[in-house]
Length: 179
Image (cartoon, rainbow, N blue to C red; front, side, top):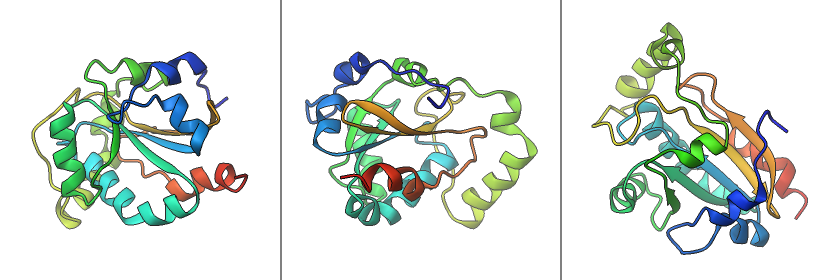
């Protein structure tokens, strides 16, 4: 499914900052697992702003948000607070082993620095005010978004470009309509 085969066992070893596994959380309600780029990235900051803006809607649709990132937990929590996502549930993955397990690869030159990405970067970074910051993780790592329900992968969005903006509501709509 979605070009990604994820073993249920992986969900069980992915422990959140709440000391609960991704598997256990997915048994309670659908999980939207958002793999972020590094926190200094304009597009990571844009994604946090987008999710913050849509958080109430996503949660009212039945989804629980979980973030995967490459920073230390304390640093991540500062960014979540800055983007009005306090008490975020998250998984620190500085070695990118979970990113890789979900099929998220390192970006090519075009994916990271191509013309379309530069244009979107100008819009997101300067025009929309997301700026850039220090690289806190692997600057080549590509992001993605997955919906997991009852220990199974239900939906996926794997970025083709670092600048892609997922339809977060669309990803959870079909899964959460079933609960």
